[in-house]
Image (tube, rainbow, N blue to C red):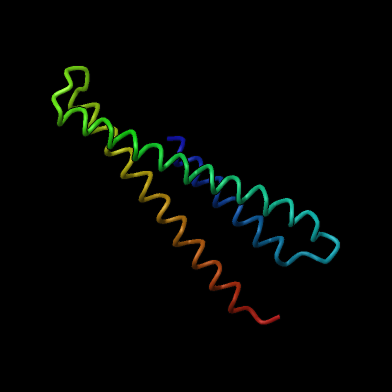
Length: 108
């Protein structure tokens, strides 16, 4: 569930950045602060997805090796979590690319 909340946070940050793009020059300093927050939030989300995938891979390898401490249900849940988190991150990337293209297409 934390990945979904991270996606919601990223989308909320994207909305704030879009609003800041239409801001007056006096608000540019605030926009620069938002960019730092957005970058750190995005990096944290990517790191979390990567961690989930690594954990799922390790559990899968341990189960394949016959580790008696690893349950098949635990492996399947970890793999599903990693898959859903990756799909969510891919959707965020797609929306970021779409927003970037839209912004680049705007006339100044």
